Amino acid sequence: MTGTTPPKPWPGSPPGPSRAGPVVEAADEQAAMTVDVSHFSELARGVLVARGVRGGELSLTFVDEDTISELNRHHLGGEGPTDVLAFPLDAPTDAPAADGIPVLLGDVVVCPAQAQRNAVARSVATDDELALLVVHGVLHVLGMDHAEPEEAAQMQAAERDLLARFHAPDAFWAEEHAERAQVPRNLAGGHRE
Image (cartoon, rainbow, N blue to C red; front, side):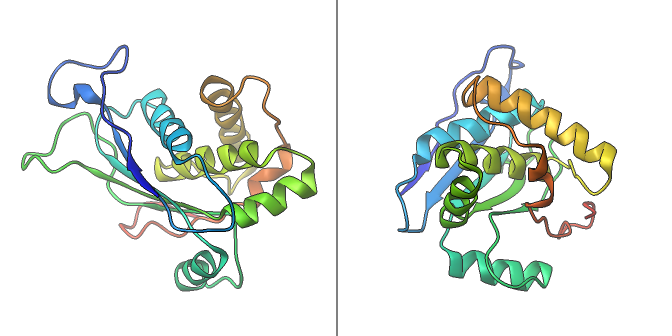
């Protein structure tokens, strides 16, 4: 199942070509479980807008364990499946591209089967775990990291706030999640692990 979150004006959006806000292209390319692509696409879009992104395009893809294992191996040299990968591309900007092509913010890839295992192990709802992974991946695309304790604390605070605003005010929160997500070095050269 694929879908695009249709651009619509967000409160406080600046006037002009980028008024519609960012676009999230979402696809569900796995069959392990049903994923509410529309909800998670809107969640990703909400995170982008809340973090000041007024235009551009983000890809959000839900994949199976074989696919995320291959991406993990190819981009990180890791073995086996992981729960989320983020691939930042272009830096967010308020200015529309001169050629009319949207800024490509990057790709977030989530493995629902791995998220489901995480959720069972931690006694939380799978949708809450998926929401955390989507928010975590989008924040990585936007340049946040958790390599240092101070960075991890900032990222966790942002995740708590964004989950409360766009997913569920009483959704779980776990401090230990920061080490779970893996993020490849920015293929454009600016992101560090």
